[in-house]
Image 1 (cartoon, one colour):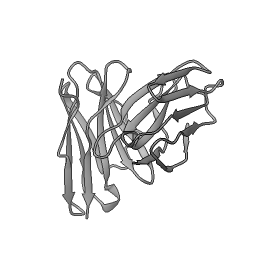
Image 2 (tube, chains in turn cyan, green):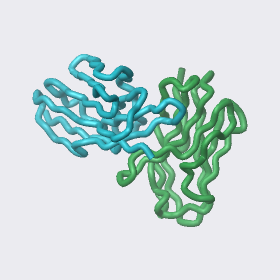
Image 3 (cartoon, chains in turn yellow, cyan):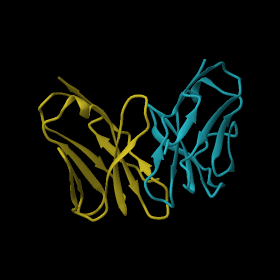
Length: 110
Length: 112
């Protein structure tokens, strides 16, 4: 079983602060996806990273795939209350279905 | 497109009762997935279909769980008999080939 561990599990910060969440595994993935899930809804894909060392930016969100393709991070700059939600990473090992991490539950207070 | 449609959105039932969850995938998508989400175990894949054929049901927890996909636009997940530990949010998702999965809004199930 390929496991993805996310940290921290919970994070509560003030509006305007920066934060980083991590997604780690002992397994190599062909690609890794990040999702955001809001209360009462299903996860929505934010980004897919494919190449080791790849960095992708989505407005104030920066995603990085580790060089060895075993880990990833999500950095949010100047967090806003609208960033509140559950952030999930999911690894794709070609030939198998996605493996989801346990998630990081983020709350941004105004 | 209306996205993935799930019904009901909420279900409260008593232990021992049969529960049927329904899903309409996005038109044209050939993969359909059923997931279960709990605080303890996160998001788990239960079963997935390709072109209406079940491919991998290794995530189905017990024989009490069964899933069908009679046609490309409809799938059901049935729990019979239901137990309190089945309480969770059940998501259906669909994708074209094995591209990005699109999730439905989920069915929140509470078994008393």
